[in-house]
Image (cartoon, rainbow, N blue to C red):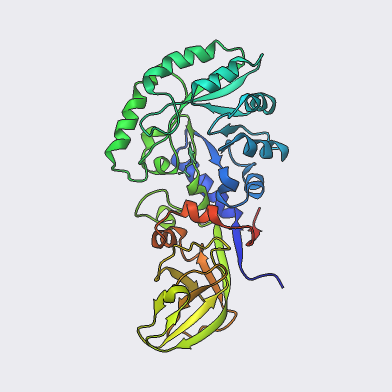
Length: 357
Ligand SMILES: *Cc1c(COP(=O)(O)O)cnc(C)c1O
């Protein structure tokens, strides 16, 4: 029998979420961001599902782009961190990849290539200070790049540091830094999922939806369902033991939970070995038979313990850790993290099942 701990990936919901991004930015192209194994959802399956509906894909690194080309994906692929060496510049040429260019060294590598028609996305550091050229340097960088024989198209891109908080003043500052470059008349890409929802003036020619495709919220204090997003990943397991304990007795490693009353404790077969976060605190919701119950005690490698006092929960009852009926955003809040990390941390021990196509 297959292990009951499994993850269901709803490919229909994935496509609906992509359409949601398109409907929010109807005049922009939208490259689906499927880096990091499609945020833990499975690169191959996610790409195969989206390939017939999206304008293109975005990944972090050339290796991820190579996998997509090997699958036969012919759509535009944008490599968000750009080439990491001269060989990767050559790969970009050979595989027709669009690449971010964010430092002088990359330009040096490009200048050593013979000929081609590369499509570059010059990354502007509008304030995040992670990747990119400072705005003042951009005009000279662009003219330098135009002189290279391998370059065909150039557009500009930048990334927001605080777009998850729609009222943050820093976002206005970043937008202002980009405004000065608008006069260059180059196509522009600024919007991640958060900006797709909250900054319509920043949609420009190309949007880069990531987390919203997977049904989680990019905005602070709002959950996926509030934004009309559908959960794609549902993580499930089952109850494998039930104990009646007395008031004052403890549960799990370090006596992480002490019962305040006589309590019923259900043991569910999932733990940090599957990617359920050890940082989940007492009280983190777990759905069992459609109802929410609080985590009670520390997460172990293979098991968690849940306070189901007063329930008629039995061995073999199904538990949902996040997904349909329990937003990953809510669980993430209880773990002091974001749904992005929960999705990416899922381990290979968990069998993935795909619904829809
Ligand atoms: C990962 C990434 C995105 C997608 O961000 P989400 O918040 O998941 O929508 C967009 N742009 C860049 C540069 C990224 O690295």
